[in-house]
Image (cartoon, rainbow, N blue to C red; front, top):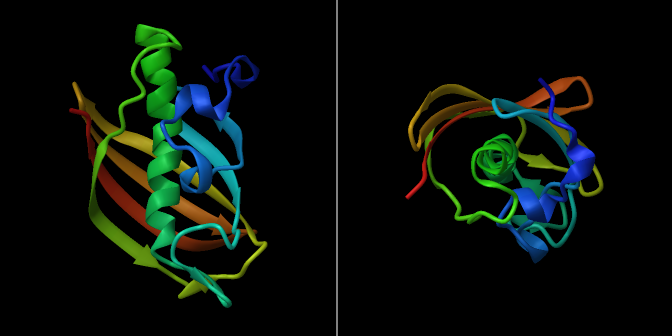
Length: 143
């Protein structure tokens, strides 16, 4: 069941603030997956005049995973519960571009493929238009 997102802000769901909040919008989400949009900006880490380095996709995948896992937290513990972040390990990352041009909108879809207590394995795909530009598998653990 897709969660009614109008009830929550990104700040309700994620611990990220300021320049480290890379997600601009949530397209859809529930407690197992999320689809987000992000516009590549000069304020992002790992940027230069050519755009954002491909490694930024790891953080986009992690924050998108944070959306579905944040919604899961809200469902179980309430909106005012601790937004403590997750430790993130990169199990696999395949980048199809070296950088993403400034102003480009990317769409990230992250899904919990395994969930056990405070451990998650997340599969993410990042697209620029219809083109897949990154495929990432993350392992998350919440302290």
